[in-house]
Length: 442
Image (cartoon, rainbow, N blue to C red):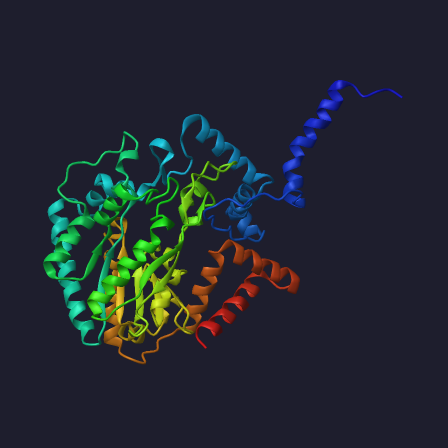
């Protein structure tokens, strides 16, 4: 029998290599880590004469194949690894890689350099006018809510460029302007007598004495090692405002580890590298609450950005009777039935007026969307009054469907259910949304 020639063997090997991505796409022969970040799923378009003529179907096929070709994840991670190792750069435009492999979020570096201030206000004078108006509105809201026994405490969370400016790349410099927006708000709060915690100077002092970084190289939120300090500072501020003792946060274990939690390596995750970066040992302390057993447990409403999420699942919440967290003043998270979901669909009057303390948490990046428009939310809630019910079931269900689509793992589960039940994905999506609506608004 005649042996195949070398070029025939090479041709067969080449065709196998070329067809391998298609085989992976169809058969899922190998399983790889999903890419971090969010990719909006491509909405399917049915093939028809009209969709073909208008090129909608062709666009759908192109986008679908771009998101789903075989070995896509491994190709992207390999390219990102090559770019990072050789050029010390990231393919993610939202990341800034600084000195000594310190990562920063671009939104925060834009605030640091003054770009955001120019984009939002145009000039410092206009910024001061807007800030003074916000202070006056805040004072009115505080006076109004005091009649319900509700106190406001503003928490100015630090940002990484303000705490570790020395690791920023040389091309990022803070232009001359007399204030950072958070530091200016802190000064205005002091003048107006508004209860607040300015963590910026506290973290700068903590940085000098701490044995470990107050921000990890790969994180953009305060490190988990600082959470007991943050929790205790907030609890004692609440005690001074309410006039009764609150428990102290006492560390029980330092838990030195190289296994970072998600928020301590979130920027590394967004790089989507092939291999993990080297992690120095840092503490992941646990803490317990001590004292304040005879004091009342206040109801707490937190309106803020993602900086609160590191406190949300700790013993910090045990100091309170009820905790509601309004993330970005858009989505509510609560252990109490009927208080989770889209804020516009909740009993806002009851939640706001039942709170003994409202924490308003924001960083300099979000100082420009002042309190995430919470002042207007309070005004509207008080105008609506108690028992106001304007829940539009159809709107709520559409909102839940959007939430499912925006959560890849949840959406994939719905697709799997649809296949098992032999119904369309749209119908299964709506069934899930209706079930969630019933649970949230029973």
